[in-house]
Length: 612
Image 1 (tube, rainbow, N blue to C red):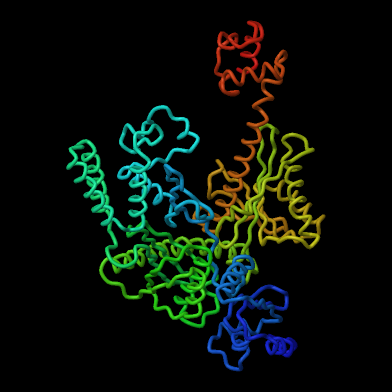
Image 2 (cartoon, rainbow, N blue to C red):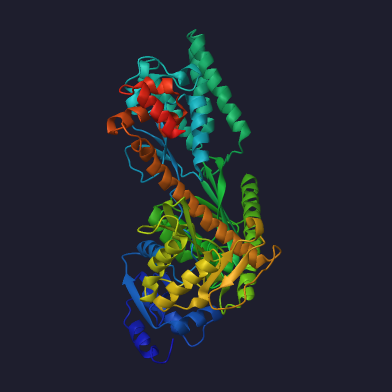
């Protein structure tokens, strides 16, 4: 915060209302620095502009504030939702960020006369029953298998169910009671569905007692076959309960959250218990932990960020077991207001719950150790490349490399690929393919000129991001072509690095060639820098080849037959339909081809000759 901006900021703060809302700080370049929520905007924002700030990191952020924006909300819960939507959208530098994950799956039981159960993702409604969320699709499918085995609930689509005339295979193997053909009454099926719902809600003891009463009632009425079926249900359910660690007291739905911070990175491991059954865990790795503004311990700040961002749109169970002492009453009040029920926090669990927390903690430690070991080697390779090329890069985390490769088959289906390396890893979401047109088939230099011009002409006009290194897969000819393009566009040719293949094209024997006249480098296969270059080059080659093959296959599917005289659209369609595609036509004999309507002996022989 410069002296020029301070009077205006203080004047803005003085006018803030004593209402809940969200505030956003921006620097002089209008980059968002931080997003926060407050029960009282004026009180909360004013605390940042006091003369003495307890945290050096907060002081560093406040120095950069040039302006602020605020939004008033109806409640702190509404502010919580808005805050996290803005964090996910704007990705402020001083906030801890958790990557948006796909929605969690649920197990759905429909509200029909004969309900079906199904795997489900998406928004829930009141017409059906939803159980979950589950940490993975595997956990949902495992639960569905249990319900099929014990309660014989149907899983078939309604269109299949309404058109059955006899039981399907699932009934024959004892996984469905076949309501589709009236093998069970609506009343009896409804009891099984109710018991399945009780099981999913953790009321297993009640289900077992109901089944035992049902079995004895059948036996008293001498319906021994029916009693035996219920006995088998009891045995199956008892076996399931014996195999799984069950929560026998308190809430049946529990989330266990373990936080580990080390080496500037953090891991949050979330384990889920639903209906008393431990369903597994999932690890999350937030970014910007090292730079994040933290008023409490970093572990508590990571946990607070996770709970705010994760539970702003997700189911919140009544009980949360946490590995970190957590004192965030404002956040908990907002989450409670949002979910509509009390949330019980447990920091020192006992018995079974203690075992769950220990498992979650161990899982977080293992996951973070794996990340740090991988990240450490990636950072070492990035640093080695920066040092080897003598790059003036302040933050190696921000080093951006774009690599180009040309791929075709004898000039056909020419494509160029551009892959991106950033933050020590390949960024698949930023990969691009370019269809190359209007060049002489097989002219790789013209193809490279076209793709580089298309990629960087906007950068030359001030749009887009210029990478620190532009890798070109090729020798002096390709590097010279890249140099010409950059010179014409007015870009720095020092960014260009060519990767010339060595003897036998083996990794480790490549030579790095520079467009600005520097001496070529032969680093040797022990070089970490060269290993990184080779990895990026190979990824560009792989990406180009997969795109080229798909394009070529699509073109050839029809063109190979179109080239044969006497094969029009109708005959080509009949051939492809008869043999299941071009490969099938190629594998067919002359006699096989003659069996197709409209294909004479002479034409069959011509087709065979042209395709072989």
